[in-house]
Image 1 (cartoon, one colour):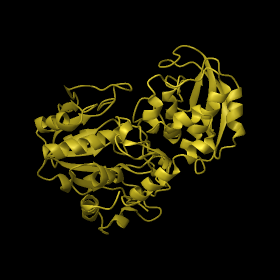
Image 2 (image 1 turned 120 degrees about the vertical axis):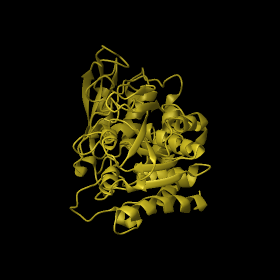
Image 3 (image 1 turned 135 degrees about the vertical axis):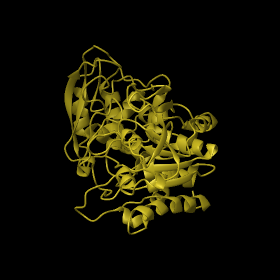
Length: 417
């Protein structure tokens, strides 16, 4: 992909808001000096008196993570502020207030707390979603959702779909930034092949993208949307690419029911691959995506995984009984992941290593019959190489050329130092 007119349009849209909300007026100004507290995109928008939204009818795409640092929801805050003409809310997977489990949403209803109409965006895209935006009567759509840094986490594709639909409906689009909780140091893992595009991966980005939502919005606008939306991004101050979530001093609100802590997010971009197998990925336990297992697995799996001496992580033989999802109510054996050096830990390599060793240690290992693993990894490569007996290093080597190409594209849209 080459730098195009759309790249310049996206860059100018993002930089304009940075300039309006900070003294530097450039992308470099988005990073504050050491020791300066982090301020989210919403905090900067509010501190500027919502000038970016002045005179506009506003709708917000958000979920329970759209909160202030004293855990008030931004919808409640803006609804009570006469400077904002808030007209509608748009809920993603799990819903605006977060009442739905994975693969569900809340539907259309009026929010009891504010009286605002809440529209369902889950699995809606293109003209049908554009029609919802038109029916809502808003002029500008604001996006504020906490991401976790993995390609198959659906909120970034809600962002993509909403940007596309906003352009079709002639609406402005504003993205408010929050930290990537697992840092933004680099991109890791296989890159999606476009023929495998689904709602767990619309476009050709890597499995762990290492970007914030404003950076992703600029990437989408500059590289992938046929017609760029009128985009503004409100960046953070005080965030560095090396920062894990605890550095932010922000409260953690689970972005989805099975993402209870930042520790979950740390492993998720690797261990979510077990959704594509007949093993439990830990749903229905207190440590989803950190506990993995199935009936018939014993200590041999943890032993084989530890023999690989992966950096930053050890594996413990573990037994657990999920309360829902796979193996509900049954005691299964497997491993618990213990990250002891998060700076050295590579979640995607770890996920591949666990797939390779699970297949070796347990004769019952199988992929899901719908080849969901191909949708999660973005191609057939991981599945076919593991089935052919490839090692962890060989599987990881198989995507390096495509990853290098994506890193080159990604670099053009990075805002923070």
